[in-house]
Length: 470
Image (cartoon, rainbow, N blue to C red; front, side, top):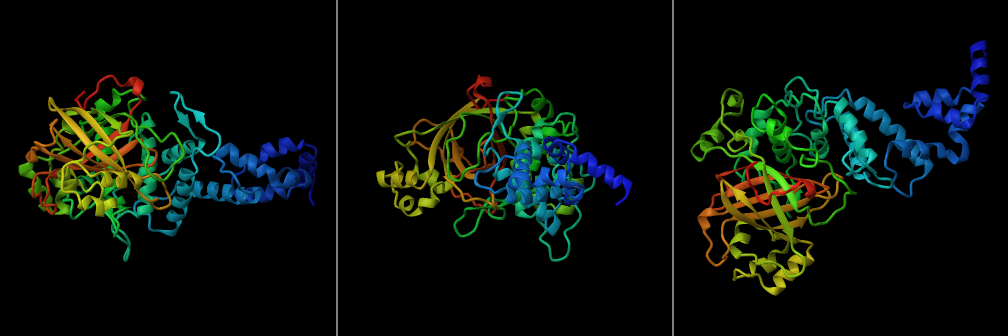
């Protein structure tokens, strides 16, 4: 043993155990922990004493702590997370099909799912905040998950799908909640043309819901929808929603989830902001026929957002007696397809008592809404449906509603109905989806449609009551 090792041995052995533990807290890699623990008995005791309680304390300082986990498990989880989060800052995360990217995505999934377990803090605006969200915020800032990419996505490797891995897409969607907290960050979103192309595709070719039960999410389309609006909301060069978004307070901007993520349906907040986009009716056919390789050289104006319109919407969730649900609305939206036998049996505009009871028993929640669009008062009537966990993350909900302009459901103007179908992201703070003109006999292989986004806002900041332009 050389003199330096002897001096190091003596130095750490003379320190209090609390100080040695404090030093160890700055170590992140397995290699560093092994080296520190091997220096002397004092360092070894700092890490191993009291059945490894050091790891519980270290884990709790960094992450939300779910009950029932052993110190040994926390040590393994902590070291794996820190290693992969550090490595992940160097990955591109274009497609997410590589093993190394999937390992990081799995860690991010766990951090998202375990948020708000245990201790909860408050952010600068008095809203619930979890340290897991701070970890995600730092990773987004330092990695290429959503920021810092300076080149367009390369083509996928041979035998790989040409879409983003759905697990990566789900994580990107959840982390996108945090994008609107950044200040003085150049988003530099690349590939906007592809997102624009996707959000206007016919519903039949790009359905939001997949699988035999129609409860699986088309994560690729939903991520394109988020990227489409993110471009308009954060790009100063786009000259669309950037200035309007900058005028919003923190209470009125999109924000992260504020409670543990749980499966099933839950009423959403009452006050929302949002916007939608459309391409002129006589242009959308030409837009859809355009070769994807020619998109960058073509220009089609995204109307509504081009004028910087951010609107407000009120939603009221039903407690007690259900609202009416016209058969025509159900035919166009299929809001209650998870109770299909009862709904098919309906022959009247007012649902039967059994059908309404079945809808409620299936976890569906009905709501109404109101607002103003282009100086016209409108109403909304719709449903929330439960969805299973998607790629390890619980809390997704299907939302459908009909935007209409009438008080009397017996006199339905079938040519002035606008259907909305979307997904509520876990946490209930952001909704992404598609609208379409729900005229009679609509052909879903060539429907007139476009994307929309809604986000929850703080009630105290909300004074207007409509879906009206700011």
